[in-house]
Image 1 (spheres, rainbow, N blue to C red):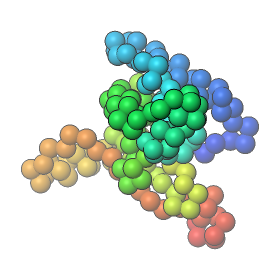
Image 2: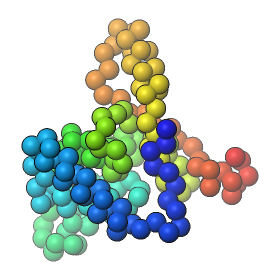
Image 3: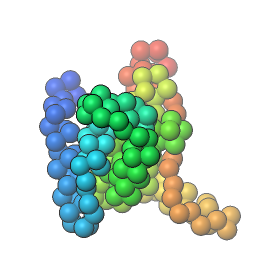
Image 4: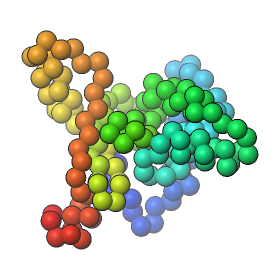
Length: 164
């Protein structure tokens, strides 16, 4: 199942960010996890774009927005919390972060990453997660966390280059 369908032309991005922030606040409250102002700001900056963002991009953006000095460890601590709560995913191959559209449902990260336009689509395919876990167990390995990153071209980019 594709979690993040392509954005529609009439996408209301402000509503998208507000919805993500509201869901995050509700989820953290239900888990008795503290969504501090700093964590909230970082999450909002991650959601501000529908593309991966690096920690250093977040540092620079937060400095520009607040006019205050922001150190990378502060951002990394906030990102660690957001990942732990399932609100953000780390895209390992890009050393970047992206908001999770389904934070209420614990799931393994499976991502389709377009090398041309940079879009990322998240999948939620339990069969993929089960196959990785079973393959690991067959090798005597106990998987504690998994992220599957598939690099290629999205449908839009493949169509423009004629290689669909």
